[in-house]
View (tube, rainbow, N blue to C red):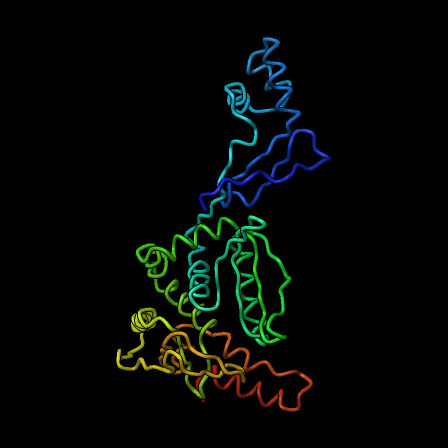
Amino acid sequence: MGETHSPPPLDPREGSGYRVSYRSGRVKKYTFWDVRKYQEVLKLRKQGFTLTKISSVTGVPVSTVSRWCRGDKPWDARFRLYFKPKPVEYKAVAYLLGVLDSDGYLTYDRANREYYIGLDTGCDEVIFVDRVRKIIKYLIGRETREYQVKACGRMIRYRIGSRGLYEYFSKLKGSMRARREVIERNQYTMRMYVLGFVDGDGSLQKRKIRIQSTDKRLIRYLLRLLNSLGFNIEKRSIKRQAQKGGVKVIRGKEFRCRRDVYYVDVSEHRFRELVGLTIKVVKRWRVPRSSPNFFLFFIIKIGRLAGFW
């Protein structure tokens, strides 16, 4: 994070540098100037031209001309890209934070000097990946539709480069106070955080939604959020699913647990009523239209939404 990075290569079609701009108010605009423009400014200054005259001739701002004439070079100024959400965007931020606390991750590629926010999930979670992709596009105004298939086709890896999101969410994950300011901002941000976490580390167990994690403190925090939203769940409802060193089966494959796994079960109907519609339920409802059971599943879906089942 504290390393000094060289600017990206200049566009050969541009003689005065190029400007990379993002959505207004989201990320700082920055410009890397061509060395030829820098040399032209120094040459005009030696000829006795004023800073204002040099700026009008070369097109370089007066402040930049002044800085160059004082000895700075065009690649000395590095503008850190930043991300600052608007009040209406905190719901999306809370959802993405819940995803990062479950299946998501933040990583820095030292070889390419790229900052990534990513998601590793099962191959049957394409709907989940699509929801995360739309959330990120809503926040920074760009997206990538490409994802990698890992682990012999059992896992999907989706990631997008964004230094602004990387630094912002790194700050949130490193400070519990900053996290709570975002999550507990209002009732909607609490719902979106819980929904993002369940989309990542939740599962369906008959008529129950199972929320699980290796961090018992995080499970207790989620329990407190659920109770704030209208649930009535006691702390003793938290149970241990697997012990450290034990074996857990995920999608038909056995994995050895490095830490204890804790979980809590909540009613699917109650969760849908107080929090929202999780991807786990949507995935179960997705039946091909060509299937003979499509009409039956459609009737059951409407009945569940109406509260008949």
